Length: 146
Image (cartoon, rainbow, N blue to C red; front, side, top):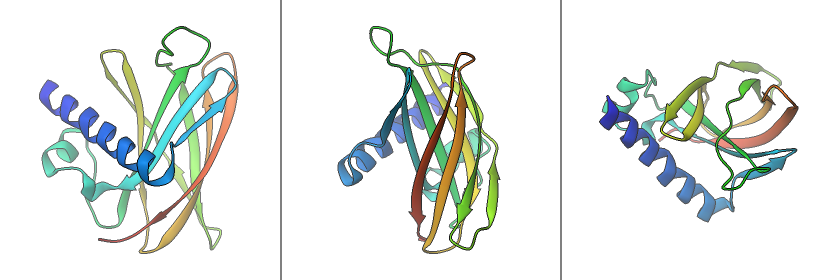
C-alpha cells in the first residue's frame, strides 16, 4: 500500500508539473492558504493506483486534486482542512463533489471524482475551511474524452 501512495503522490506531482508548465501554476493565495489545484481525467492514473484509491478509471471520469499550504508559517507546511463543493457545467447542471483526504508524510491531498462529457467545461466552486477561516476557490476546467 505504501508503494501505491508513493506512486499516487508521484503521479499527482508530475501532473502538477505538466499543468504548471502548460497553463501557468494552478495556485491561488486565499487568506492564510496557498491553494494548489488541478482537475484531470482519471485515465491518467494506472489501473493499480486507481484501484488502490478507489478511483473509477473511465474516459468520462475526472479527479480533482486540492492541496492547501499555510502561507503564514516558514516552509509553508500542508494544512488540514475541510472542503465541500460542486461543479457546474455550461448547461447549469450541478455535480456535488465528495473530497477524501490522503496523507503521506507531511503532504496532505484532497481528492474528489467528477463525471464529465467530451469537451465539457466544468466550473468548480469549493469552500475550504481550516477551522479559523473559510475561503472560496473558483476555477474552470475543460475535459476531453481520450
